[in-house]
Image: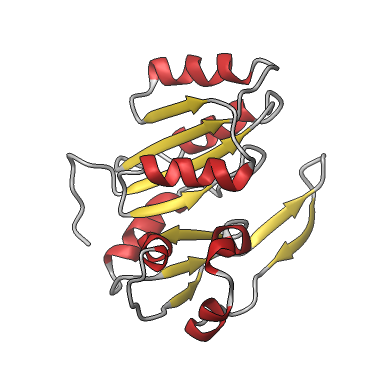
Length: 186
């Protein structure tokens, strides 16, 4: 995959609904990644708690932020809307109450530039309590081609979006493209 300065190669999709307590930190976390080849797509489900005020404030100052606010059918619908808007070659899902470790987005771009596409990168998820203390580390089980094909493709995003970066592989699956499975743990 070639890095193009005219088009973001990494699209982060954040579904949110009435997430006023989390959205500010979520957006700041993506900005602090200092990833130059990035777009942050925020899909708001019609929040009524001030979430959109925060999103608009950041979007006015940061060109990489795009957003939509309208009623939807829940998180999966919001993620699908974001995927439709995404211009990147790599798609990541970041829930409003989640965050990335420092510099992880640049590491992901570097890694994707070194492998054969299509691929899925699966990462561990640190689960913290309200005091930012580590409760446990969630590491999904090995994902292989046979396991993915046995899953109901309509539920693919729901099954794996919590702990991984999804890329065009998921989109290609929905379009019926044949692929090879590469899973990497980071």
